[in-house]
Amino acid sequence: MGNEPLFLGKPVRPLVLGGGSWGTALAFHLASKGLPVTLWVRDETLCAMISSDRENRVYLPGAIFPKSLDVTSNIEKSLSEASFIVLAIPCQGVRETMKTLSSLGAPRLPIVSGTKGIEQKSLRMVSEIVSECYLSDPDQYAVLSGPSFAKEVVRNSPTAVVVASRSQVMAKETQSLFNTNYFKVYTRADVKGLEICGALKNVIALAAGISDGMGLGANSRAALLTRGLAEMTRLGVALGANATTFSGLGGVGDLYLTATGEQSRNRTVGVRLGRGEKLEDILRDLGQVAEGVTTAQSAHMLALGHGVDLPVTRAVYRLLYEEASLVEVLRDVMDRPMKDEEEF
Ligand SMILES: NC(=O)C1=CN([C@@H]2O[C@H](COP(=O)(O)OP(=O)(O)OC[C@H]3O[C@@H](n4cnc5c(N)ncnc54)[C@H](OP(=O)(O)O)[C@@H]3O)[C@@H](O)[C@H]2O)C=CC1
Ligand SMILES: O=C(CO)COP(=O)(O)O
Image 1: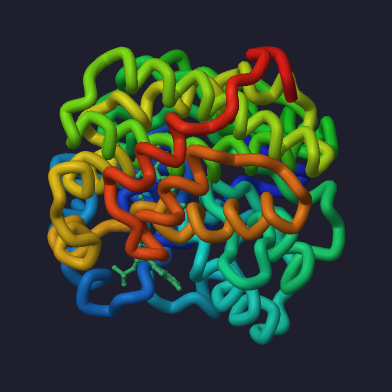
Image 2: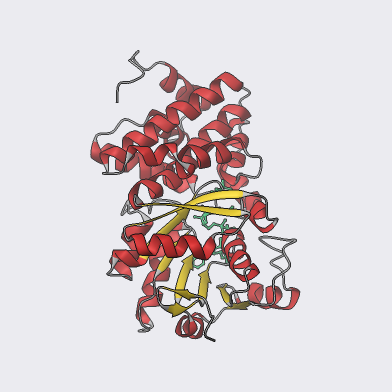
């Protein structure tokens, strides 16, 4: 008992919310360190299957759960036993989940978020939704992001990510908690920048996939990644983020992974769109979230509201939400006025 690891002064009892690939991978990762982890899965049938198989065969087949990983669909009981929350629910479900937690009346717990996206309609980042609906103290919030496919994390492939929190203590303690010799965790202070990186890189990955699906070639993909990074940075800086965050693991690192890695759901959606398939058919086959689809709309609206030019995001938005054709959006991007590369 005396040597029990602590997180912010309390015994480590993580409650991971989200029984998809990322929630399962993060729960697996922490439990592999011997920590007593509870994974909350909203669907009772899936929860029972996972519990008897000791494996999430729907979302992350092949990762056999360590002994200390427990699964539940009872959020109330698991919340009362937890000392902090790891959030791994798709962005559009975060508000509803935070409201549910608040309604249970249990003490508010610190949150480490692995969710990437921007809420539609409200155009809020995850940190903002959490602070509106659940946590009043932003120092109890951290975001964990960076190039990290769930499947590779549970295979112990060497991976490097970054944790950002307004509080240095929260950042450092989260770093120590998640760090292993195959999962290297860096820290930074720029929560907003890291959240914008994680959200926007999915939209640019969709664009890169579209370009590849159309067969446009390696030049086009490189141009999209580079100009995509420039527009991610432009939006971030306009919203008060630090430009250097965009050249780190959560920015260029995750952008590169998602836009070029075959495992990416966002890239896959893009490739199939680029081949002329319908979005609804692609999403039905995928059966998992591709956050870039909703974020394309949120980011486009956010950019309009702040007077920021996001041509690649606008192209993806027009294709997904305005029924523009592939030829039209390509022309929009290529027919823009000539400018200096350094022009912001
Ligand atoms: N997978 C990855 O490699 C990585 C993912 N991420 C991010 O993590 C987040 C989660 O993604 P991921 O796990 O991959 O997604 P998946 O599509 O694999 O799984 C989503 C999970 O969330 C559940 N869910 C959906 N909506 C709600 C809701 N409103 N309340 C509660 N649970 C809900 C689903 O439940 P049900 O089955 O009942 O629908 C499912 O268990 C995303 O923001 C993603 O970008 C970040 C880094 C890596
Ligand atoms: O965010 C991710 C890896 O860092 C996962 O990307 P996809 O959601 O495109 O699979």
